[in-house]
Image (cartoon, rainbow, N blue to C red; front, side, top):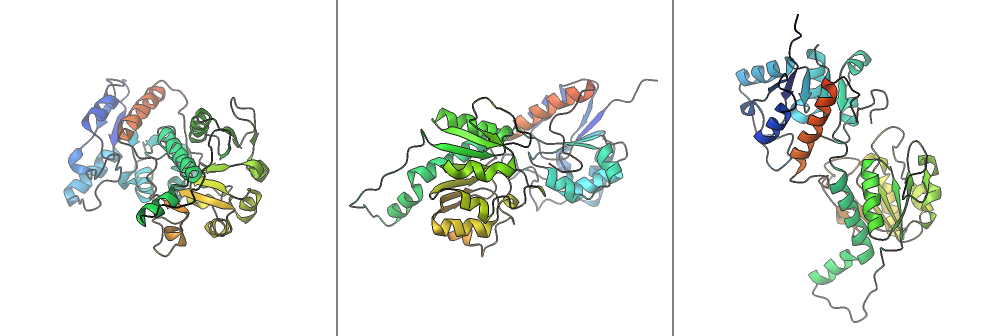
Length: 351
């Protein structure tokens, strides 16, 4: 008996040319995408789509019928942990779900799936797609801190031309520590080295990395920080990284260190960060992620003079949808050939 063709369902907004890219992987694969059932994008790479979009009861039934018929699903339904939970629980033939996010482990954990389901359904992330935009944003933070752009903006706003000019710091020849030398961290290190920085960092499994001066695990992070001029966090939010950047770690930095966070907000004790900013231990913080998102209106980070707040948007780019579709297409070929999928979410540690 000829096996039934593999069915891929697309659960998130996606342009027609990128759907065609997925269809082109193998003619035996049935790709189901119904734009009328998917919330439209409000901006490029708006994977959740317009929150005001509503399906009729008939459309809702058709949407879930499409997903329940699939062996593979592109995106979490509703881009939510609840959508993933319903999908994985109701669809007993489901084998693989591809997440739009690079750090989808938190959503997989929040879905509350039992171990049998977690073992049956593979979840892959879009890790790597966001490495370059996040690395560029991290270097923006380094440059902002070294070149005192916050002070320049305040002076401009006041139309103030200081009589005594203020010096800035050279990026070239300075030292960067990257917490988390994964794809984002290594891309950050590549750009930093191109600007003349030396780079050290942390990795779960310690070993030499070309171009990296020193590698430690997270337990050795504080020892790396003594001569750091700037620090970039790329680490995911896990029980092992929760508030890794605490008062002790900030205290290990030299006064005037620049701090950038493109990982997860839960990795940072925000109270300890504010204390470090107020004492000058941290001279500037460039933050794209926060412990609670959206950042609460009463957070002191909003109005701190040495903090840039970014609404978890540093990874977004107009190229994202195409890059994720290309990544998924490569992974689909691997899946069809029986290979090992890259960037699987660990079903125990959720990263």
